[in-house]
Image (tube, rainbow, N blue to C red; front, side, top):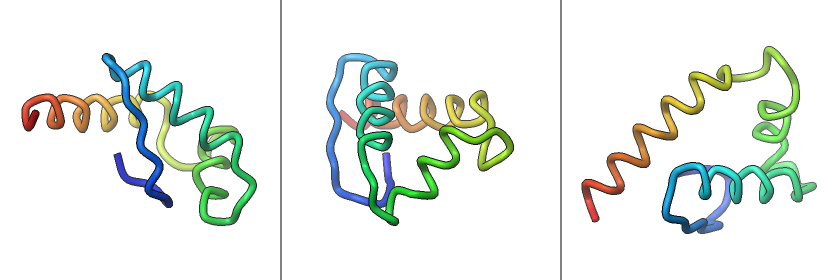
Length: 67
């Protein structure tokens, strides 16, 4: 899905992977993940939840089609 590290999340649904991704980002304290943490926790920073889900689901569908 892209991001500041090479962490791999696996799941049967986009929601399972999103939950793993969220937990991973929230558990980090490094500067590489700082922008993503802020986008996920502070209103007005980065894409809206709806925009993020649209992008995430588009990427999920693309990965399913490739697999």
